[in-house]
Length: 176
Image (cartoon, rainbow, N blue to C red; front, side):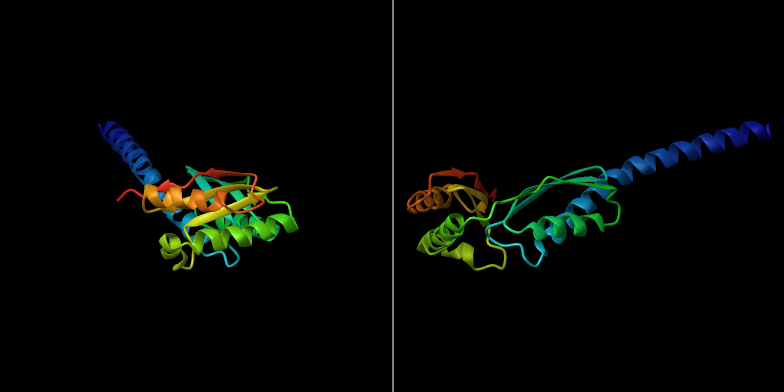
């Protein structure tokens, strides 16, 4: 009789542990996601010409995007590795090739986009939400804007910069 009671108690304990582990997994993933976002945004050399994104799959994090400095790629990986609960980091961040032409385009694009009156509100924060990625004269706009009009204006402004070969507008409109 006592053996049966112990068996039932052990079975219930095992089921409770499994249920608790299943309940904690989504919460840990959510915590890891928030911490990864925070740590990436706090990188000291992350600028408007860099685009960092990530995907959290359980306890594994995949980093993607484009950066202008090789050190930013390694810094991003290092800060994410230190987050409690992260087991593996797959760093797929692309380092953009150095180019005087691209550097010049970046400055011109910044002035054209953030200097346009309707878009100046996006230049106010520490982290500007419109990311300008330039690779060999080709431009990608990444990030989030308030409305479809701002997305279109940013696209028009980028296309108006001399020397730009093409513009890919990946801006997302924020859901209110």
